[in-house]
View (cartoon, rainbow, N blue to C red):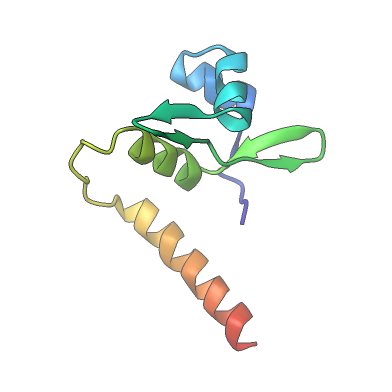
Length: 93
């Protein structure tokens, strides 16, 4: 589910100090970590591709499996819980 906190690929690239094509390659081709490919999840909204904060966070975790897991921030926890509630309501009906 995409919300208002999602960033376009150019905005994400600017925030990270990367080129736009680098972020585009993360989405389309992914990067090799060990012996597997890791891709950045993105969704097309109109004419632009957008990345939710949780998706980028998961991409970073998948790219750095040796790093210890950090505690979830309060805002990330709220987003995760809200998404779980929406999924549960959709399943229950």
